[in-house]
Image (cartoon, rainbow, N blue to C red; front, side):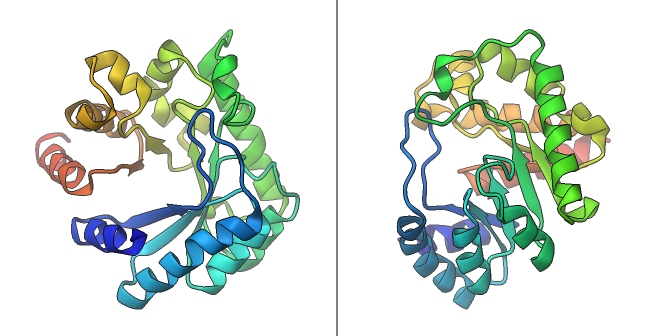
Length: 237
C-alpha cells in the first residue's frame, strides 16, 4: 500500500512525504472530503507509527487537513493556494503548520484548455504574492509559507520553461520555493520520452531548479534525486 512506498522513500532520503487523496493531474475530477479522508488517514496512521518524517497533505479542504493533522500530518500542500475553502487558512494559522501555496489556472479537469499568458512569470509571481498576502492576513506566520509555481498546471511548454529558469525569483526570493517537475509533460517535451522514461530528464531539471533557487523538490525517485543533489552540493558552490 501507500505506506510501504512512503517508508521506502523515507529510507531513500525523503525529508517530506506528500500524500493526497484527490488527483490533480490534467483531466482529473474532484472527490468529496469524506472520500479523501477515507483514502489518506489509514496511510498517515501507518507512516506515523513507523517514522517521524514530515508528512504533507495535498488537499484543498479544511475537513481533510484537520483529520490529517489530528493523526500526525505536518504540512498543508494546497493546490488552490487557500482559495477553495474559506476556513482552511485560519486552521493552518491556529495549528502553526507550514502551507504550500501553488499557482494553477482553473480546475484540473479543464486547466490545459487555456495555457496562454502575456507574461507568465509576472502573472504567476503576482498571483503567488497575492496569496501570500492573504495567508499573512489570516494569521499564517511568514516563516510557514512556501510557494510553488505549479509546473504543468494550466501552462504550456514555454511557460514551464520560463518558470523553471526563474523559480528562485518568485515573490522576490522571500519564501522557499517548491518545484514539482518529476516525470511531467514538459520533461517529456524536452526528451521525447514517455512518463516512465523521464528519470534522467527529471534529475537534470531538478538540479537546474535547485541551482536557480528552488528549496524543495517533489520527486517520485527519491534515491536518484538524493544522490544527484549530494553530488551537486559537493561540486557547485
